[in-house]
Image 1 (cartoon, rainbow, N blue to C red):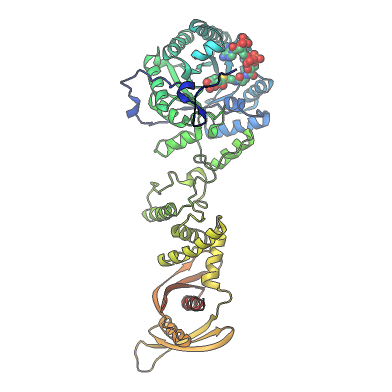
Image 2 (cartoon, protein in one colour):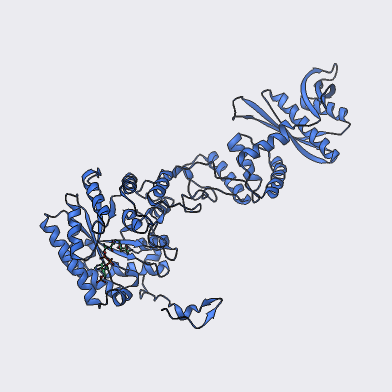
Length: 569
Ligand SMILES: CC(=O)SCCNC(=O)CCNC(=O)[C@H](O)C(C)(C)COP(=O)(O)OP(=O)(O)OC[C@H]1O[C@@H](n2cnc3c(N)ncnc32)[C@H](O)[C@@H]1OP(=O)(O)O
Ligand SMILES: CC(C)C(=O)C(=O)O
């Protein structure tokens, strides 16, 4: 039984009694902090092995085959297809990949095996006929596992690794060569560096790699135990001290127990590693393996070609969800449903302005606030960039009306309409879809069901001796009754507002006016906006018509109706 901690603090056992801090690495002249990642590593997908071994229901043939095809399509050149000595399913899948998988010659199939003779023999059976397969053998080397799991000292653990290395290289030679090898001191992050170095060097001595036929030395963060800088120190230390470094490919295999798998991998690459093993979106044991899609897209957004095709992230997600039978959360980097969406006002305002600026600048560089990547680069659209709820502002509402309906609200109308939308979102406490925002705009400013005044028609004619002044004679309905009204002005807007002011007995004037064509919808209509000054202040009206003058006069009527509503309220 696990001994109970005596002292309790904040309801939990006292941390310093139950857990120990991870030791620092003695590397005062570390160089990785000033390095940058300038090229993609060699990628190896371990979805079909490490990912698969963590699933509630491991993949059968169909789920594996679909994932395998995706990995090939994405451009992985090294794919760990399973642990063929562990199960018939994995054995048969290896045979299928070799015999029917249509694997190009530049792709290496990789399989995992423990350092156990019967499993190694079976692994070679599974690999017969494969082109340059990678035999990946491992044994655990950590202090804890040496003591608790294997009950062996360092020499005994080293012996497990070297015996397997001998057996594997002999079997490969007997089979006529053509194999590649990978060795992992599993639980590396729990292993003293000198011990890991001694065991790795012993394996290297047996495998005898050359610069043309390198050994992959995989240094896994089997369990992530410390901050990412410590992993980077460990990798730099190993890279400096390993024998025959030029004949080695140093590989990372990070897990994500502390939630810093990505950071650890990036720092590990800066520290000198050449290769990364990981899974799509980070499926894997416990909190997962490192997420290779995020890693690749992190590189991409730094201007580095990631050498992995992530251009159809929806397909990657779909296959991930089918094959792993797991669901990707909404906030997952680059792929989550909500990661390209802003609900909050200031973010929406900045995105709206950024998108406009990028269109105007017409430059290839992407620079939109709050969007570190152009969603279209991964096959996502701009549709969901902005969604409206009670946290939203005028910029977001304006963006939606512009993008979805071609309605380009003047700034002061954005402010006015936002107050109306805010009332609704506060009342309902939910997201307001784009369609409802548009319906609300049309109802309030354009259609105005139940409004007192409707515009019907107008014509203008000159006023005898006054140059430039015209009479506007218009037909309107007032609560359904047809009325003829008349006014004077320099143009139809001026004259019509004069006519309405006289008719309603309210002093009205135009404070601002604008219009534009409406590209959306079947009719090529125009929309006009009028900001109307009245004794109680200013407010907006809008009109939509295929005739631009009619649209303007409708906008005046719209504003007048709203003034009347205010007076009656
Ligand atoms: C960190 C990782 O992801 S490592 C990969 C882990 N993946 C898997 O285990 C998935 C597939 N594994 C399996 O299906 C099974 O474990 C098998 C078929 C490989 C082996 O099954 P079994 O022999 O029945 O059982 P089990 O796994 O419990 O064997 C453990 C034994 O192997 C030894 N062992 C474990 N790993 C290794 C290794 N890498 N090299 C040599 N011996 C090992 C253990 O010390 C233990 O020995 P003991 O029986 O003397 O106590
Ligand atoms: C076999 C090794 C590489 C492994 O999966 C791990 O350490 O997590």
